[in-house]
Length: 305
Image (tube, rainbow, N blue to C red):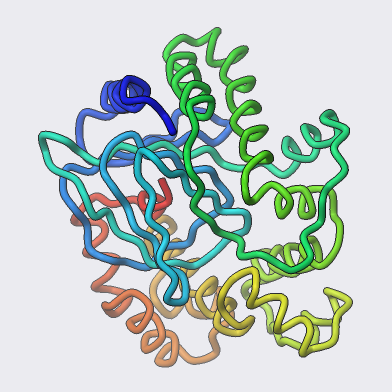
């Protein structure tokens, strides 16, 4: 477990970079910082592969009924893109929620594994693509050095990538290590499911059906369905629908697409069906949800850190 002085220092460094609510991307390598002065409502988000450390406060993420709680004693690791529901549980203006995330880069992960000359110990059964693990002193020590390094241009260029590499190394030693190895080194069912998930993301606007995806994974339909749900906690068609809705939300928020335009671009033939499913996913019709987000000055990636 991290010591009190480590979580205090990490919180100080994050607060120094963020003096008000919001998210800040500080490095091209994928470092993000988040501050929230108040608890938030449960909302739907798309989490991308990342390591998430909390310096202060508490957050909860839900995936198909399973709850993941992370705080200064526990970090969250997401190995594959997952649609989740999440909210900040503990935060006040005097003691805000403060966290940092490090995007998992598959190429960097693969290079590190090969340099470690580490043969992946492939688990006997598929694991979920998300987990909470106990934090350690060495984990937080690397995180503190990373945030100190990004404050100076040369340190950010030379030292920060080394700190991120160290954090990835510690993640490989944790409960998700075997899963990360199998995906990065393209081995077993884990890699095949991750490959199909990438196909879904890159072809989100095209017709997608389970038999074709199962064929791409080299599995029978029943085996594919079982393994896909083990990793993502949701059936393939539900995953595809959620990814399409999140992509449509991004198109409306960042590219100014209308609801109908976004619907067609992510593969919906019926705008009315899109609006119904969008409201079920996010709680409001498309126009109202985008207006709410713009009025609140939110960023879609905020909850992911």
